[in-house]
Every structure is written in structure tokens, then in C-alpha cells.
Image (cartoon, rainbow, N blue to C red; front, side, top):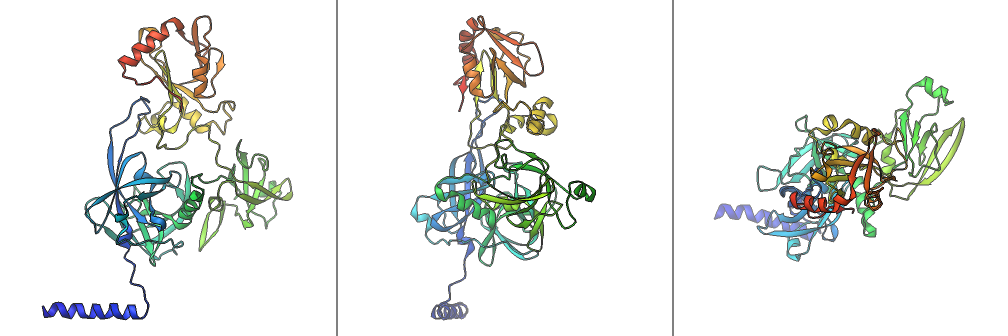
Length: 489
């Protein structure tokens, strides 16, 4: 008993001394870090009327102001049920998603049971940590049930790809603090403030993890103030670096001028009426752009897109542009990217489709291409060409999306067509197919008692006899256990 008193008395005196001097007790970050258990179900884009088996995964989160819990989008995407647990409480609490941003891999949750927030801490956002400065990661990685706390060093700050949605890149910070499955969504702390959210690790290296930094988190929180999430804007052009001095002189650039070359203005983007191919962007909001496409950032340099990522959609941007020897100031509002094909991983969406006489029509998307294992190498080459080059090669600009024949479900009404698959549709019954809705409209207008389906790359159409379709659809729906032959939204 004496030894116990010797330990407790100094602690009590320290607490009284701190209270007398008005000092706040040290922040207990573990009380602001939670464990998230998510059950999710994904659709099958190969058989678009079906769902895959439910899956359960674990992640982490941080309690912010207004009783909001910050985590990764990939921790709660496609969720059917979400539970949240605190370190000091054996009970689990049901949570709901308030906002989710798949592009920057962030989400906000809320627990409606007020008891959950008892004895918790509210964590606040900080800034961007200096290189080689120490950070601490909090979370619930696999391999144990208790909270894990690891320290590491900030080793790199750059623009990199966010793997959750794919094909998008934002500011990210690399650290050697352990970030393992289950850590995702947990706070990365420095000086008692959140400087990042743990979200992915390098698959090819040990002890390399990445966090979403505070500027991207702030962009997300600012975006949702109006009650909805809009996303990040795009500059509206494709550019190339101008590191070749001979090319710069060819373009009429002086030795004290630098910038990037506009190679393409994206149709429907914010720059469509303001910039031209061949323009040289020399500065963005008065920040000089170097010939290697970078700008100054802290002690180093990063890709110029960071300046655009700081802005919200419809905010103006001012560019200094060199056009045919003249220096111009150009201002226009930024817009989101006008996608014709879904380049990204999709979540909280069911695949759209339309089945006519056993022929499955659906839009071309990355999710469909991913139905191939190692899809970038194994998917149908024609579909990959449409996916990757429809903008650069200006493929069929009149099409708002590319509608393909997934496959044909064999039936006596479509005999000899069952081998047709992965072909992009040009027209049905002389109606040009520019969206999936056009398929539903076109089959109402048969040609002399037949459906005439033309696909790209061949002059021989696919033919279905209209009088056989109604009975065939009934058989196909029953045989293949299809609840509905159409989902257009």
C-alpha cells in the first residue's frame, strides 16, 4: 500500500498544480480515434443484375467537431451496415455516412447515440508537416483488437495517385510510420493536431505509407458546407513540359520565361472558350510554373495541379499565357471534368443495363473492364482503345457514352448470335446510340418486323425477329433469374 501512495501522491500534486495554473491536460488522441467495422456489398458488372457476396472490413477514424467522424471513403464505401467502437468502451455503435468523397478518399460519419461521445476527445486539423519531422499514426490495424500507435518520419511530399478511385492524383505525404490494413482512416498527428489521414501503403516496399494531408481534408470540409459534395475542379487542358530549350525558342519564349504547353483543350471543360492548343501557361494565380511543370512548395517543388486542387468548382483561376508571342492574362471559372466514360472505380452505384432478346447492353466503364483479371493487359483491346483514347483521338464526339454488348444470353430467339460479346454499338433500327436510354427508345421502332443492330467495325448487322422477342424475354428472365430486364438509372 505504501508504494501505491508514493506513486499516486505526486501525480495528484501535478494535476492540482496544472489546474491551479490554468493549463489544459495533455490531449489523449486515443480518445479521439475510433475503430470502424463495415459490412459492404458490391454489384457484379459482368452480370449487372446480380450482387456479390457481402464482405466485412475494419478501418479507423478520427472524431472532429460537431460530432463528425473523419475516415477514408474506402473504409465505408458500398456499406450496408457500419459500426463504430471506442478504445475505452466495450459497446459498438451504429453509424451513418454524412458525406463521402471517393476522389480524395475521405468520408464523414456520425453516430446518433449521444452516449458514444462521452469521454471522447475532439481532434483538430493542423498544417503540412516539414520534411524529416516526426509524426504519430493512430489506428486499429489487423492483428489485434486494441489501438496501435506508431511513430515515423515525414519522408516525401508530392502529388501522387489515390488508389481508391484510381486515375486521380492529389497532394500526398509519405511516411515510414507503419500503415497496415485497418489503419486506414486513422489520424496522423503532430503537435496534437491532425496533419493527415492514413490511407494507403506501398505494395512493393516495406515501411512506406501515405497520408492524405490537411489541405485536401480542408478542401473536402469546405466543399460540404452547402450540404453536398461537388468534388475537385480541373484546369480543363492537357499540358506537356517544356524542358527542351530549342522547343521553347521555337515557341518564341524568352530566356526568363517558363511554362507548360497546352496540347489539348478538353471539350466541355472550363478552359474551352479561354485557352487554345499551343498556348504556354507561364503562371497560375501569379505563381510561376517551371518548364518541368512544377511550382515552388515549402522546401521543394510539386506539380502545378496543386494550385487547382486548392480551389472549389466554379472558383475563378487567372493564368498568364504566352500566345503567338503575346503575353495575355486569362481568367475563367474552373469546372469538373466532363467525363464521357467512367475512368474511375465506382461505388454506391448499380450498373445500368438493358436486355433485349438476351442481348445485354451496358455502358463502357472501368468497372466493366475490371471484370477481366489484370484488366489493363487482358481486357478486350478494342474496348481498351475506346477507354484510353476516346478524348485524344476524338472518337465519336457525338456519343455521350459508349454502349457495348456485354454478351448474349443463349436462347432460340438469338441462335447464331450467342458468340457476340464486347462490341460497341453504333445504331439500333437506324437510331444512333449515344446513351443507354437510346437503346430503350430504339427497340420501340423496329424495321419491317426486325431489330437491326449495327456494331462498330463490321458491316454485318445483328438481327432479331420482333415477334419472338416478348416470349424470349419472358423465358430469359425466368431461366437466368433476372429480376428486371432493364435498369437505366
